[in-house]
Length: 306
Image (cartoon, rainbow, N blue to C red; front, side, top):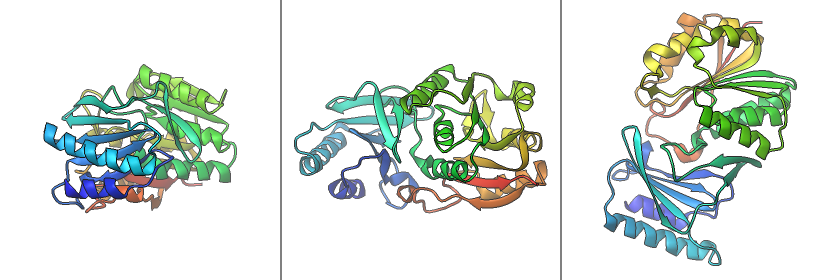
């Protein structure tokens, strides 16, 4: 745990939501189970193996000591989550969590929920993907965007902020899309977005009729039982891209699976959407550094033929 304690002892006072320590990247031997995230004004410590009460006491002391240096007039708020398989056990360890809890990234507000569920409403590792969408929207005002597996619609928010004229968000979860609507309201976005609580694979007719799109974002789970398994289902998404993406438009392909590398996406794209040109792989935030780029989050940009 020493590398995590060292990170706590030297961490800055964050303003935006961000990862502070990424043991999962394998760069800190002995700390592979630990992550530390800032969701101001709350710290979130996550472990992927059971943590003892003694370990949690050590973490509390370290956080309290650093917080006293960073912001002595404010209470320490921190949450612990133990993640195992597809479940999570979450505990409020000190202080409180705001309700609603709104965090920022590059001046944009997003609602998060640290005390319930496996995920928290906002994926910190996708920061560069959101910045790329923001830059594309600024360079090409008036984009029409399809956001598949939209979750809480962060891509939609930044697309509309940067000048997109329309974003269609599709996700099976009504609850996630409800948070997505609040994210739009949070940022004063009153129009331009639609929210479709549909199974993507049974809704291609409706999705295609609303196109073509200047940008299609594919950000599926790597594995969700009964819903999506990347090894077999990503190809089903890719083969739809020629009918969805406007000439000269873009596709943003995202995959967070340590088992599937960049070649999986590139080879499958060559088979399913051969006319698309690979442009670049976006970097991950520095805090998410990994011993292997192949294990880390993959975010690839493709361009459709003109």
